[in-house]
Image (tube, rainbow, N blue to C red):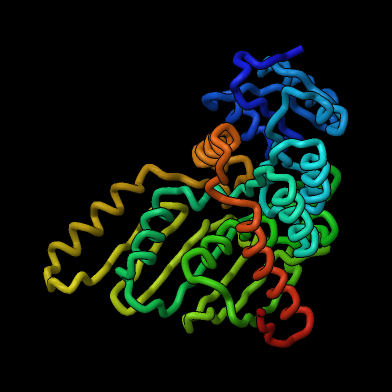
Length: 358
């Protein structure tokens, strides 16, 4: 049986070995952490990964949670299971890191956040794109007021997925019950999280969606117009039907400048600092482009091409949060915000009416 190499280390486990494999490799590399166990309903998969990483394996996560040497558990199962399983983790006295979206209903999210708070346990939500350098630089520019009054932001997630992708692993993707939606809730949720993180809380949304090119329940194309509480506007386009996949674009404009980010690389950065020095502005833009030129997100056409660098950073932060008894960099309640906006988009599309947020 695998044991901790140091009693002071954080013992980690992963449930769900699809996307969860990135968590397995991250825990295996993390400082002050021991990967204790992995769990998946597919015993052959669980056994193979356990042998690769030198840890124990289970097919029943409740049995795994009986161990005293596990302090932190990643939940990387189908989205509609996340919070139900996370609450079992909390009842077992463990901290939890949930893959995105943290769940597909606000009620499930709220109950889970409340339980972890009551038990004094840490709950994190994977939104690793917030940690990408291009996004961090953009957030700093917005937060410091360098863009001036925010005017408009446009995000597009034009990816492509095959019908085989949706049929894989029992066909849970593209279902309302287990995926919570389609191209918005699964693929675009990261970018919608970034949109609201930069622009603030939404006030209203109007939207349309359709199933254009897949045999699924949920949307593979959606468009939305958002008005934010600060008065700015935004547009969202999210699709998995746009062959061959053109990637992800975030454009944000204020009264003093604009920033364009494509696939986590800054492509344009023009901010008026009041100096009137065009050369200085051009030099700053060049520096920003060069600073993010090595970032890469290739998931537009290949779901396995997602960079794991920022996943590792967030996993390490979660380990540190447990060890240091502090909150993680992206808390569970942060996962609610993108889901709230996406559910508003679905409501507007379903009713044909503008949705007003509280």
